Image (cartoon, rainbow, N blue to C red; front, side, top):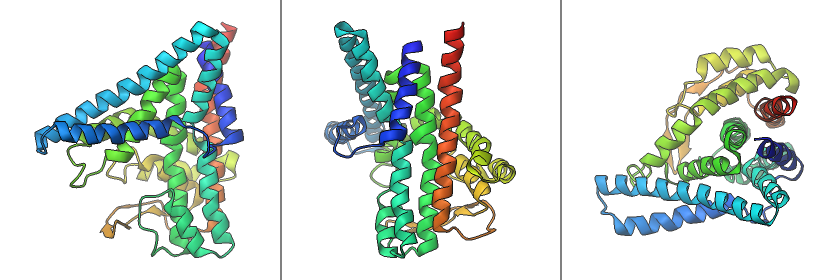
Length: 322
């Protein structure tokens, strides 16, 4: 327990310092390649019927989770045979790669800098790299709002949830969570192609994120004063609007952020040329502006630090003292 919590603490610090260098190999990219390859193979094996696609989706989940977690366990075991210090170093690197606080900040701040420079086309392009909605018709407020929502929502599955799973089960459990989350982002859509094939992956992601999403929302409320934002309104909107989404987990951190920033998030947007109606989150007290991207990043980083203290530093200190 002490080694993997120590590895997590160091990995968290490395993520804040280094972010995600695009030139470096990353396990999530390997998981993405595995999902794509298995999808192609499974669609050839199973019939293109409701039951066939549902069964194929179950096999996808089993194979991706098994290979992702199993390969991580094998890698750490092989490293242990060479040296416990090598295994520790590898777990530090894996923990670092499974966290995305710095990358989330860096990518969203590209949007902020474009908007602050008056470059709306550049802001639309930058935000299109981190959101799934159509961005070509967004005005400055819409672009800023999309970036704020992305930072708020991904604070949970990009930082807080991985912290929790890494703290509980080290790199293998962290990798299992990241594999499930990546599957949901690739196949967990309710469209003609993935309605049945991706159902198992989507349901699994809902289950795994049920507790982390709620903890992440609460952490963002607690972190609001440390980020210079409104803690009282963060709690008010969090408790009122945290279920304003079809997904059981997506609105919790957005609600906390909306309250802390005194803005309204979510609402209807275009996806692949089709208008999708969604409820709003928060009160429309002031328009979302580029500066709110900076503010929500302060909130996300403060919540991440609180999460690291709660899930890593406190258990580690208790184990050492006991």
